[in-house]
Length: 204
Image 1: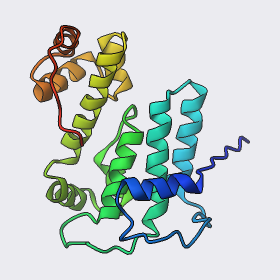
Image 2 (image 1 turned 135 degrees about the vertical axis):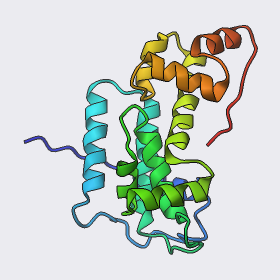
Image 3 (image 1 turned 90 degrees about the horizontal axis):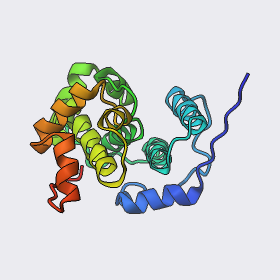
Image 4 (image 1 turned 180 degrees about the horizontal axis):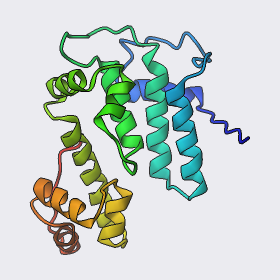
């Protein structure tokens, strides 16, 4: 049996509240130990973090994981204010988006995302699009392309490896998705950046 422990400092939760402007909905942390029963989602996340650490995941992965865990733990502290029928609540949206960012390298299905907020796949897709203006698949793809851009701009990994690191099933899938969103291939983007010709993608 292997036991993995993960500590998230209270200051991290407070910083997340401030950065995400949640102060009006979570005025204070009334429970310093929010996990008092088994949480299968949190257990899976701790397992993923431990596995990623063993293979040398970078700081970006750790930061994304911490953000997701903070959002998940704080969901129970949210008053639920601002919920509109047919839309995801702010807390639900934070949980889904943080999970996406923390698991960009892994396969993520609509069913996985829907289960985070206890919705059916159909209802989740409809509410997510109504809330963000994008389907979950499109939103996830744009997050992955944004991460790929950072790797293309700052590293010298091959296109194929960058595609895998960003969760694409293969080089062709990565190139096709990148061209659809950025208007050029990953190789062309890298060349343009090296020549000082940049392109931007809205930050999600």
